[in-house]
Image (cartoon, rainbow, N blue to C red; front, side):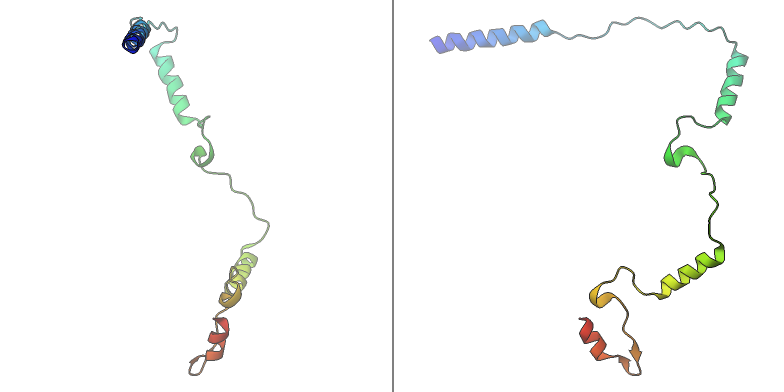
Length: 117
């Protein structure tokens, strides 16, 4: 009997706490009245200027075309470095995959392939 009264009291207290909390929401204040001293033509002109100006909030990729930076090397030297790097082999290779085996008259030299495995 005591447990039944205790459970009933707990249920009543929890129900009372839920009902007392209630729903709280902001009250409706109506439509806000806006009064401006600028004419429509002034606002339209300011909007046109803002649309054509740079975005002050742009960052990174959305900031537009970056300014070109002058290089310190000329085109021919960069091209020569690229060709040399392409002929140098695999820069990330290690062990058996460092270089490509040379071709003999009958195909790949078996000794080269076996040593790389």
